[in-house]
Length: 343
Image 1 (cartoon, rainbow, N blue to C red):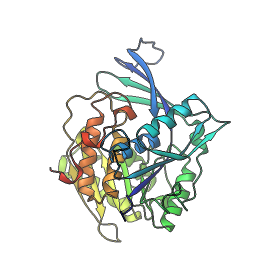
Image 2 (image 1 turned 90 degrees about the horizontal axis):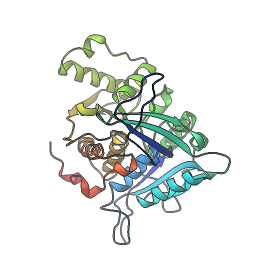
Image 3 (image 1 turned 45 degrees about the horizontal axis):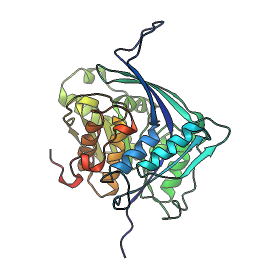
Image 4 (image 1 turned 90 degrees about the vertical axis):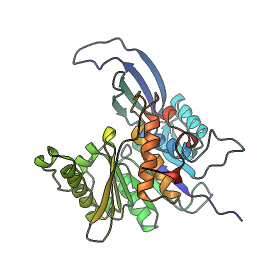
């Protein structure tokens, strides 16, 4: 009898992205003619679910293509055109959607995305809609297929109260949680107690650091690489001391800093992974979500934290070379195989 494949449950947001591409962003009171407009599937939860599914599958799901990870989404959409569109999009990437609720009295969440063509940088405005109604699911079963997922992935586009309750429940049932604290807000310390993976960018790390009473020294910000790395490690160890096992800080074009907890006192051991090579930056919208999804897949497949970071880095590099959010996420065959990671 074959062994069950590992499973990931993503609890988070589903948004319809309204995307405008422009040569530059307008100033206050200024009107510009944009280059193009489109809409597509988004939401950090849904993006990360698609990344998990695609990066554990050789190509678009079909009868002859078996995924290496079972990926399921928990969330909510409105009972409207956009909600239907999002569910079909998720299924098309191999994501299970039985735990996504359709709410008659709510509209599907939206994200207005402005992309600056020259740099590929983006600005995003979010309206929560149905995402604000996401409440803690019961983890007694996963679509009737297994009792518990191997990993739960969460973000902060659903109510913080939900995040807190899910983390507590998962901890009590021995399920690892990966938290991507985006958009960054202050969180109660209980969220960090026993948290397996904290994956965030530099701005999010600064917000969370301040919320737990850790301030980065100005002199360190302005000095060379050695002191910057020391400051990164100091930041990671603040979270280790609160109970976080693995802390990952993505640094955009400067790569990724990682640290894993070595003892109960909060001491950690860390390192830096340079940014993966990118031919041309087109759109950074889904880079962070691709990184989270790839990292999650690597972890449940048994990779070390270092190999997981390296592989996620390469997957995110593929994403920024393409337009869009979910459409830009690569499939597994488009990224160097996980267990052949080099420097």
